[in-house]
Image (cartoon, rainbow, N blue to C red; front, side, top):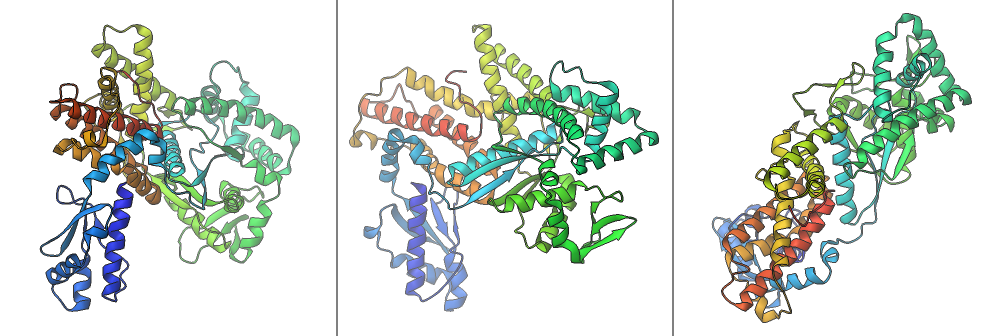
Length: 559
């Protein structure tokens, strides 16, 4: 409903510009807090064109607006020195409740977009378990995919699996020397083996590693089958970790695909004018960058960048590309974009995220020193269980474990998403599971509180006249914020910033708690007020459940 209100405000301002015979790109529409529902700074931007003071321009525009012809705008006022304030029709807001109760999913729906997005995220090497940095990549990508899909885009999530290169040759050599037990979780066993392989390797092993890499690219079936078994064993473990946080991929694309299909030569051919040899290796030089991009080693084997360019060329034909990359890929992401430009291929939109810090250690797989995602999830689950047990001692073990699992999953997902990608995260487990902190448990508890209110009441039927009793400030504030759900979803999708939506959902939970604190529901003054307030609680619950689902965790009925 807020989108319709905003659209009407836009149309009113555009009509005013047409009357003034002006063409302005930016209407200056913003959402001021506690002043108006929407405001425009248009008088400031066009006053110099008209040669008049902003206050004169603003008064003229407001005077020509006919409220009788408007559906969602109830009032328009000019405010010095040059603001036009718009106020939403509160009757329409109250009617919105019936729309939510009838079809909550439809209330959240946005128009289908004629665009398919290929969203690549996670893409960790199959040389061990995911660490907390990979987890941030995965959670940004998965949450963004959910937001984009609900905003009307067609989205395909991809995991680009690095099953070639020196790391994989070293891993294969390690398996040959030490063997695989295949007991326990595959990614963790592979991680230990990879660490051991790095510790034993010396100059005498380089010849074997180079030979394995050459056999990769020559298509040696025995070697590739041997490697494929190792990669799949590790990746099964990685997928189990991702599933613990409701993360999935629509498609897994292996690097070896582009070698087997001889797609690397296509990349080389398209970049030929910009290539040169240096000490036997083949590299791509950029006129406006100091750092060259190596594509082939001196022995003729490809490096990651060449295979990645082939991958981007392939997926560019399938839709708009969106990549999630860590801060350690900043230089490479610029080189990737430049190389694709030289290939006359559309560049991906790239979201760079900063790292996650924990006091337990760093994140180097080669040295075997990192906090695995599984370890973090286990720790958060234990902390959540302790928190739940302390607050609900009367509940049985099964109930506590179930709620703790929901709280832990929400705590990790939300705390990793609520921070803008460009900012580093300092993840505090204790705060993440605390009901009183700015996190998922607070949001989940607002949903459980709404459920409890409704479970202790009988809504029955309600009329338009009864719903009109929602005239106190807290009710109106909650209604207005609920109405913004589709608008906030649209903004997060267009800006490709999932933290925008996460912030909104927390604000909505906070606003509901303020409503609950200040407005009696079950103890309302009369029957009409009680029914109307219960209906508002019901609408909040339905919308919040949809919002929580979009963020990728669950809303417990009881906490």
